[in-house]
Amino acid sequence: MKSRKTQIQAKVHKIPAIRFEDQKLTSFSGLLIFQALFSRIHLKKRLKECFRHMKVSPIFGRHLMVLLLIVHLLLGFRRLREVDYYRDDPLVLRLMGLRRLPDVSTISRALSQMESEGVENLRNLCRSFVIEGLQREALPRLTLDFDGSVLSTKGHAEGTAVGFNKKKKGSRSYYPLFCTVAQTSQFFDLHHRPGNVHDSNGATGFMLNCFDKARHELNGTLLESRMDSAFFSKETLTSLGSENVKFSASVPFARFPELKERIEQRKRWRTIDREWSYFEAKWKPKSWDTSYRFIFVRRKSRKQHKGPLQLHFFEPRDFNFDYKVIVTNKTESTKAIVQFHNGRGSQEAIFGDAKGDCGLNVIATRKLAGNQIYTLCAMMAHNLSKEIQILAKPAAQRTRPKRPAAWKFRTLDTLRHRVIQRAGRLTRPQGELTLTMSANKAVRKDLLHFLDVVQKAA
Image 1: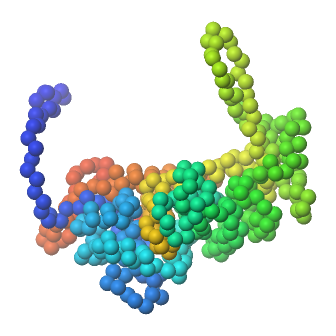
Image 2 (image 1 turned 90 degrees about the vertical axis):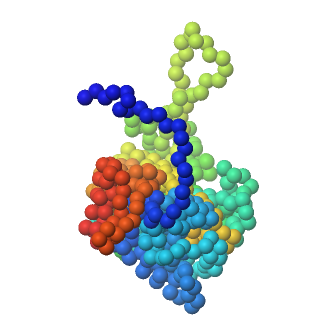
Image 3 (image 1 turned 135 degrees about the vertical axis):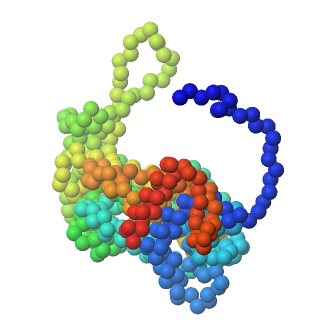
């Protein structure tokens, strides 16, 4: 049916008068799905257990501060002072179980009073939520990736130091070492460090602790790991091998002249595909006791031509080769191992999403423990956004060579735009608490689906 122009277009000139009233309006109707999730995992109760050791119990307990920070980051805010923009939102207050939210100064003071035992308890809780999800999904294998990420600050927060910082040279920073789960795109654990340490600082003990926790809780699951060249050491590889962890690690082959000679003298390379080729050898450095499988890989890349272009002449395409060496204790085909190792780039996407959407790179206070709490809250907000999607849909794929995420995840920013940031009104018709929203079919479908799967999983 064809519509008339007057049925479509409207002339609008006047700006309406503005009035501010308490109408029980919420800007975050989609928080309802996280209220159901928090109830399912008993988040508030378990956060309270993390700070039970503290003798002084203020009106706003430490667990409430942590819960507020998680909600704060889920909503897309980063600075503490931005709490003022939603402190009267009725759905946030219901989610928190409060009649009013604490002042910004109260939140800041609570963060500055945090101590190491509370940080450790919260870290264990964060890891336990991930483990519970993995137990429920019963994945046949678990891929843990390890890498550090710089958290910069312009100030002088406790525990920061000037170190390698590619984006903000000379800035003080933290350099925590993160452990992530490739299959669920979640943070498993972190080892907090100042910004002036090498990537391998404290890495071996942290890695073994992560694998011990995973093996203890996930019986029968095959454990594997991918590492960059910073973690290449006799101690690390020997320890992982003794723990029956299948690994691959980049080799800093510039340190070993013999490896460079092997590459230079090699004439015949075996083909993986049009881009990659390889050869492999059993080898060990002179000071090592055990030989490992070393895979020498080269990648064909186009050679850049500099200078003026002769458009009327034909120039043959010239190529360079980029080389790298991988050490592994895996017994699969070379192609599978190269693809497996190259898949570790997905961890950078996890860091990017967490920093952009969950404030992982925010340094909130001048105190070390307070900043550690804030980082853990950012990790939990990221993990919970993945957890609710894991519950909502079955795994899209199982084991593939590059170990991509087993679910097709939306970013938290996408969830905010589509579900969380929806206007609504809380009313009590005939005494029944009701949240009224606009009749948008897409929002209705997604919101009801999330609520249904979370309630069924409880």
